[in-house]
Length: 402
Image (cartoon, rainbow, N blue to C red; front, side, top):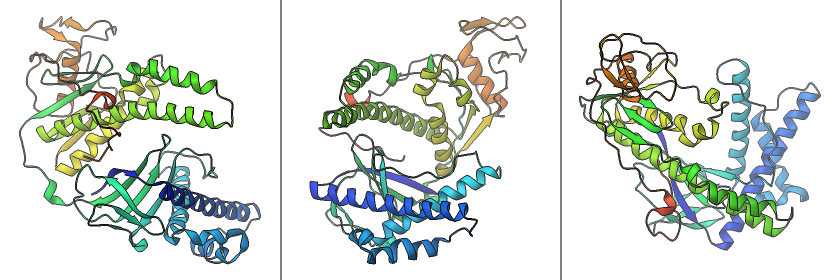
């Protein structure tokens, strides 16, 4: 399968200018191609092909005074910008046909967008030097903070500048069957929640760190400072970056927790069962902020790809399965219960059940997994410290695929 490995970049002042020029040229080619296709559609003309657009908007445009500066960046970057537009149109049309969730039509990119990206393929002849730098055409050798070795030779590299002004290199690599782990016997059910981030069918309860809630005071202060700055001023740009960095710290800490926990669960269990939650629906309730802070969808996505990567099994059960209403001991349905009821006694067998552990056991049983009986000892798992409090690194450390 294909995986992305992300590493932090530290370009010099000149390299930042070269990257800004590459971002701008790619954006202009993308907008020119989108405008050409919108014009053809409005005039009832055939849909312009990518090859014709490449010749017209890149090769011929470089010879004109208005677009001569396109020659200052790698041609591969401009070609990949046209490929991105093709992908955007394909996703849009597939959504109309019901082949994927619906999404809007491609839109023009703005130079004020806080996130910029360009992609280099093997044709660009980029390389990783013996000194560990990433050498890109017409940009030079970029300093990279390597957090781990790449498992194979990357096929492409995407340079990304995020809203916080940080630069990352995202490598696409192929992994083979050598990563499949030996088979093991434990099978696990997971009940995701807000009071505890996850409750396992073996009785383990993992606390919810509530990264966003803990950072609200700092975020509020940064946002208030931003609102007081004059629009269009340099001070407002600086304040916007401070807000973006505060949000990035929260997102990085949450992603780190998801990676560590999902990797541990997949490595230690042969099969894992989770409930197919409707996050969009829950995000429309009064619990919206807490639901987004938990990040269930991202966590389940990590479980899914890591299960495929390591040869494990991930099972999703239906969202309407009454996991909180059925006794895991005798199987009798005892009816719905208010959220404040955390422990209840089964009216049929008299078993005293923890609501969350009982639900996790029922999730595993609904998926057909063999689990231990409900009532295992509950222990609190250690929660990793947020990125802003962990270690003494002078610069933020990159997040990588696991």
